[in-house]
Image 1 (cartoon, rainbow, N blue to C red):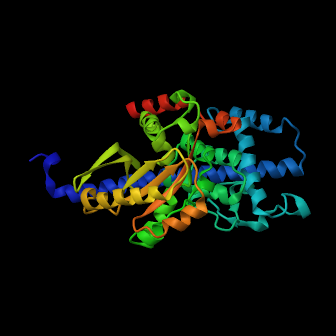
Image 2 (tube, rainbow, N blue to C red):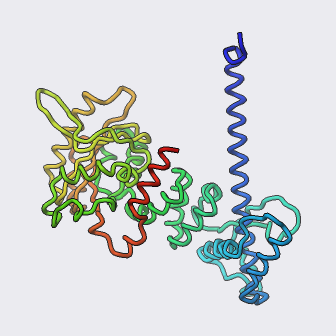
Length: 388
């Protein structure tokens, strides 16, 4: 019997393999943590020296050049990156709320919580601290790349909002493109505020809160252009035309919805009691472990939509749901809604449902359109990633 087929050692192989992979992960995480702490410490050092010693405008350029000369092949310490390190420190130091570095003869460290790493000399740099902010997500902060931090600092100013995107990057393993898209869509302000009845209808509070966090109250479908659909106004767009536009751009639709969504099909056929019914869009959400039925409406929210969706969910649970799956969830996706009214009427329905709105390219400001990536470039990138 060959070693490859000897099942006696299967458990041992799996245990050793798991230990190797965990060790590799821990090593990579440790490298990233130490790099971030180093960058933060260098940023602090440059900020303090610039203030106390009145460095000239060419100081950072000179330091970068000399570092390159003394450490040939050194990467990541260009003039621009050293400036980013200073910004990395000062942006978080500013949110800390303590005195500016150098004021009152102090370094400003009294409001910082220590997060030291062991190392040789240069204690001014390697005595590293993180901001002493309430609910500061230190683990997540040290778990994402410096480039992710740069994007968040450049695009987001409030501490709580930064925490949100740091946690999102860490938990969802966002690429830079996904992070930029999430910020462009203003996910922080659209998360968990849609009218819904999840707490009353889902089996456990944990599942309900998870569902609330998964769905936004508004989605940016920037890949849909009304003019390209061949109509003059939203009043002339029917649901099927809109649905076809979404299907044609289903990858982008899932990007807008979230990475845990898997598309099943459009016009999903339900046949119960001799009645043919069709769900506009049917998804499966891996995090929630349930089917998600989406009904697309191009006009304003109406209470009749809830009754229609409740019927679909009843049939999905009775005829389509697998034994290990949670109850199906429904989402009305419409152009406009009175949120207070929707929140009031939805509470008496027995199936878990929510109501969200959407915007398209026609509804976006010119500044927002320019900030978003070109849809053709995004499509080519997605296709390239899929091939890889």
